[in-house]
Amino acid sequence: REEIGKLQWLIPEIDEMLGGGVETQSITEVYGEFGSGKSQITHQLAVNVQLQAENGGLHGRCIFIDTEDTFRPERIDEMVRGLDDEVIDSELEYRDIEGSAGDDEAMEALVDDVLAKIHVAKAFNSNHQILLAEKSLEIAKEHEDDDYPVRLLCVDSLTAHFRAEYVGRGELANRQQKLNKHLHSLDRVGNLYNAAVVVTNQVQSNPDAFFGDPTKPIGGNILGHKSTFRMYLKKSKGNKRIVKLVDAPNLADGESVMRVENAGIKP
Ligand code: GTP
Picture 1: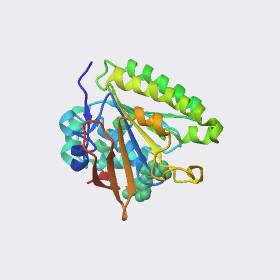
Picture 2: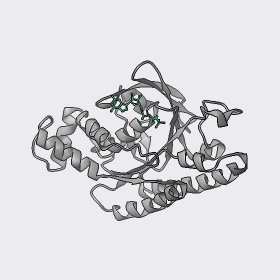
Picture 3: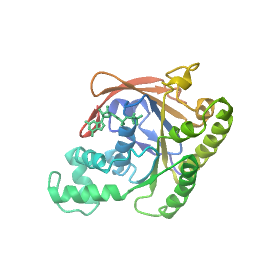
Picture 4: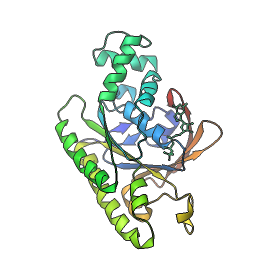
């Protein structure tokens, strides 16, 4: 078994809270209400995972399962340009792109190269999503000996299709069973290919949670077993977001702050 990798958010307080970053061979669940910034985090991690280890990355590519049509290449573009100049310079050098940070042609080439290492797959319904997770195993295998192996698998959002399709109490067991199977295959990608698995989830801030705790993520207990790291995102003033680590094994619960800026998520 390969050594566990740590993928940095590049927000020192949060990375420290996580014991170095998002772990490979684990599932990390990022949950929060509408607009709390979950997709911003998955986009940023899709960039960061590609960076050299000394810059906080895992030198790998990303598979991005997009269920709500939220993936935005333009956002990746902004985030790449928003990296520190030294990081950009070292990425340019590593990728054999001539020029330096701020140089138009070089930046365009870098953005293209980063985008080429994000495999976006749109899931049209929950069965398709399940299928795409199984296909991710094949993609990871295909790139196993590549210069950039798959080191991150994002599912944004993990639960939206399931929630929309399996409605009502009678469907709950069925939904959980399907979700569980899905999580199992995501977990397999993480374990077999030493990848971090990051999934997003909404909180139950709506009528079907009439009896539930509005700050609890959807998916209840089954997700509770599988997502070894759970991070709760809460809106604060302006672009500020509170990031809480909840119930992580071997780590203290903690709370930090991030900001959603044009340049990406920042301290
Ligand atoms: P849902 O997908 O609706 O559940 O929300 P989410 O938690 O995924 O939120 P998302 O990641 O879409 O974040 C939305 C927030 O990020 C908004 O409040 C915006 O302020 C901010 N945001 C999104 N795109 C940009 C951008 O291009 N620039 C900046 N500065 N902020 C952005």
